[in-house]
Length: 218
Image (spheres, rainbow, N blue to C red):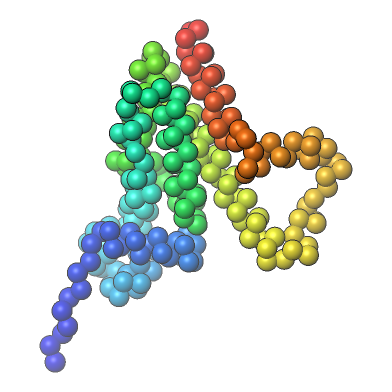
């Protein structure tokens, strides 16, 4: 009996399968063998495209960041602050789209083409505002850190929501002691998801105020 035709596969197919595993089974389940099994291939076929699990993870991060509109962020027709807000919000939203994406983006250095493009766009934008290159690089780092920090808190909130939904009778009871934390209780609405302005936007504005004014004064 002749063997069946060899199945063709692309890098996109592999990355898509890896994201399906990430969504369904979590970050720990993402592996070259797992992706190969999902696609009905041998691990060797995957290694042709990605020589290691780390290479696969980096490709997934790049896919995650590939939809960020860096051209719009570089368009000087809009004020720089508005462009930073739009780019930061888009990055936060992109991470929120996939379960486990927060772990994914912190699994290794953000040194792929799209990740570096994001950083390059931020640095160039701050330099266009009159910042020296060194200050612009630090400001770009601060913006990325703010987005990833809030995204990590978002991910923690989603886990908590799932646990509360699974066991509403006890969730939160063991850990809640509002009487001992009156300031937290009184201000909780200011950092909730429907707060206006959002804590994310407010924090980003204060960050931008600081780096822009600080650079101008130095």
